[in-house]
Image 1 (cartoon, rainbow, N blue to C red):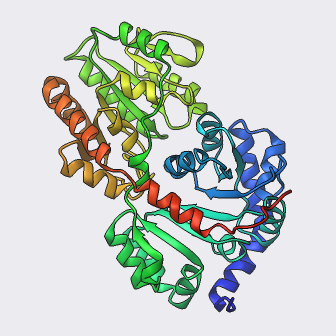
Image 2 (cartoon, one colour; image 1 turned 45 degrees about the horizontal axis):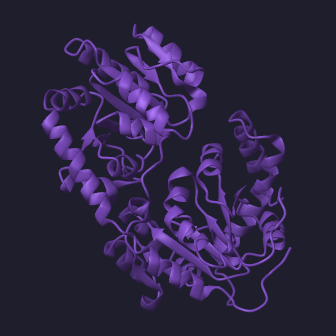
Length: 428
């Protein structure tokens, strides 16, 4: 392997120096979000479970969206006659909690090692991965350079702005990307942008959108029946994955809509349920009645606070109209396909750097309304509440478009297996 360009060597030196300081901040944040202190050391490469014998595929994503987009591929790998162990790493407390519920048997979750030499050395020495699969835009220089196995980038998602930043890195970008054995891009535009950066054409192909290929979120049948019965005669809408600052706009819109629909129910499902107490106080200050899922209450109020994890499949099924947050404030937006797969009429704001292409596809299919601001959210909701047929048509279009996004899972799995070494499997 040729020596890394100077810029990447400088990055590595700074990352190694910064790792202990960065870990302290990350540790405190994870503990504040309910993670046991012992598990935080996983970020330094210290494993907290033993490595199973046999082949092991390491799948890494930043947070919930990236890791869940890998589920179709993970499930297909685990469905094989002699499946490899799947080690999934991510960086956030929420992703750890959700993955614990959604990963199939034979999968392990650990927090991702920091992109520092010591953490990666510990991590690789313990886990001995046979293949490293990075998701979307998780291009970490030292993670790639030190991997003891082939490295793949799946579902590559790079905006024009991100590609422009990579172009400025010149030989450093070419050197790093040349370490990737395979890249599957979500779109031809992303694939061409990566070719322009020096990725060999035979190492990149358009592979569809794995997020859209994921199976619909599950919901407990008894819980869904109970919620649907309680809300049967009430119009309702869902505000999903809201962030700090957005709830005020959502509650203001709901208060305005209640003047026209006195029995309207808002299901409010914040991105981070640990903020629920503060949101509950905010709802009370807005003069709205409230019940909470986390304490076993029913949706009999003006606002139902869905302050639990792992039940988004229930809420998307319960609400025909859904606003997806992270988009009225500069958080970059969130994955729309979970709601689209369940036939929701979708709305979102104008901060969509994380999911712009996904939302564009849904908007072009008349399945979503995008670009909303705090000033226009109420009007958009009012129009859909007044025209249920339009909301149903949007939901049907969303479901149809989602079903067409296969993500090319079978070919991707075949490509991954072809890259894995044969012979005696690693053991711990």
